[in-house]
Length: 413
Ligand SMILES: [Ca+2]
Ligand SMILES: [Ca+2]
Ligand SMILES: [Ca+2]
Image (cartoon, rainbow, N blue to C red):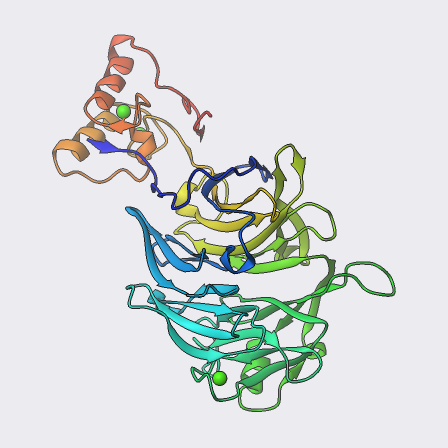
């Protein structure tokens, strides 16, 4: 018997009195609460970074620890005594190490996923975010780490990771004003940066900017003079409180603390639509929209992050909080669309589907692409009762398969 449950995650901290968290979510997506934490904990014990392992397991910095949440529970990768104020947690190229930045001691650590402990590798003042250039990017930047943080000038900067806590880092972008915020790469090696600022002192409007630097610009800045913020391409402005950025498929996603709107959200920023911004998820805590969306990580799937793909479409992991009574992590995935009883996936339902399930269960046959479609009686298990149910329906006037049937759709809630 094959039991059809998704990844089961163990809650490390349970029994906390957290307010109910809900989302107003884009059509065709699902939100799943994974973890909740002590919202009133000291800042050094709050969530301080979020990443995905190559297997899609959440990796978190929280409570003075860095943990990976494997299918069989949480495992501590590193702990800090005293706890430090986490800035970021990102996965390195190859997926063997997470990189953890903190702004208590301004250190950057490499944290192997094999649990061998944190190693101090670099130091950048008030480090805020870090991202590795894709391996397919230009040779000068491929696979190298970029860190936003305090600048050498009055503004802030983006620095190149150099794996040396003593040596000064190579400055890639200088004079980011007022603060350097989240950074991410697209697969072509363009760097996206949000200048983090509250409001413009003259207009009173949010003044954040999304700026892009090309791989050629970045390559030229390595070992040469730093780029200025104004060298970048200004893509959009007027956001307020973007905290983290991630690229997934062909779009940017950004978490918003909600400074501008009063409501924490995840926004999509679509390069195919002139970088227009739309809400992907809007947060409600208790009965009221509000709170902030904070850290964001993306895990690309084998299919597009679009309704219908289910877990094969990848997922977003985001944290939320209001520092009063809500703090936790949510995973967002596309809804799975399927036709129940179409086990072989040819979009028709007939005898060959019953044969397909029997072959899979007993004759080492091909694995169903969508397990849920083969769970013909919708009892959560895949066993002989499923083809029997279908044969009974097809030839003996038995009940039809439960929804989604006879058309493709989502599992009823
Ligand atoms: Ca250094
Ligand atoms: Ca079929
Ligand atoms: Ca079943």
